[in-house]
Image 1: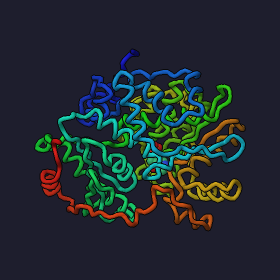
Image 2 (image 1 turned 30 degrees about the horizontal axis):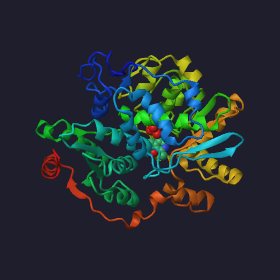
Image 3 (image 1 turned 30 degrees about the vertical axis):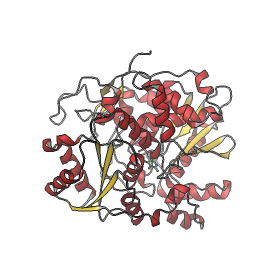
Image 4 (image 1 turned 180 degrees about the vertical axis):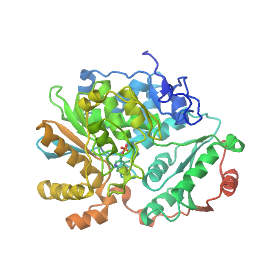
Length: 463
Ligand SMILES: *Cc1c(COP(=O)(O)O)cnc(C)c1O
């Protein structure tokens, strides 16, 4: 058996941040998974990164996605979980295709949009849900509480649907989700309930935070399933290996472009390279929220507050939550408020990473041009990725093998596509029939006492 991997906090070396003592211990994978965030509000990092040989990577050629997931997640989990159980979790998580679609030459898009909510977040959320079910205290019910302003909630809700021993409550602001999003959230059903809060997104977040820190609710075993959980980063390493193995010739290297918001997806690629995947350059294009490309260019970091609203709305982020992990990997430290304590090795970062900010106008142009030239429909997030790749190739010269990620299905953005291309994108199976689904949310005011009553009356603590 290999060395067991433990997890430490990105804030471990800080003196008292905001009155919180730095967490200097290490925890196991299951502790990191069930806690989400470290007690000092830092992010958990593995204390070593396993290597995968080129031979093992190449052996994934023509194999199903599930084999790539076994190899990559197994490298982190082989001392934590039995291989048969891991295989079952992975098979259950990925009952859909991962198409690699050629755009031109040997430049491809990888379509991560065929899961139940038609966004790449399904990949991480589905595996994390099943890992949580496996690692939870089997005598108890694990209660997931999430506050959402839209897409994350439905990805998490769908991911946990029918998962044993876990109940999910999703809070959303009554007036701030679109009709379709509301339908998606209200009708998941089974062990997943929606709560419509008469308030704003911040109210929903506050209610969740208060419940987490309320000792009178300790008996309910809460967890957050939020996007900074290491259990969501791990599954996001897999598809880079999968794509490379299917497309490469003779161990050549690859350029990968990842449209980026909170940097969780791109972090998966950064880890993949450190595990041995021959990534020539990781491209991290952002939308008009330019704080990271500016940092790479100028060397000083300043978050954008408030963040800018762009058509690639899942990337409207003014301070990426996973930036702390990128800094840590390059020997720097930044906290969740955006304060930098130590700058990372920026030369090393520039060598591995290229970033550029893409305006909405350029994004729209790219959607049009890609359709006219190649007959491929991109949605706004995927277009930011593809345009970022084009700019990189213009600046650094052509490169044979490139993959850009398409992180959502164009059918999620019908208005933009009709406006730009004059056609209505076909709807994937996962999105069919949503309008006919039935289900009603609970409705509550933005009031903690009433929320607590609701939780006491409606949540189970044991099977
Ligand atoms: C969340 C999301 C992104 C951004 O991913 P990060 O991991 O936050 O960088 C990009 N595209 C879509 C469609 C998303 O939902």
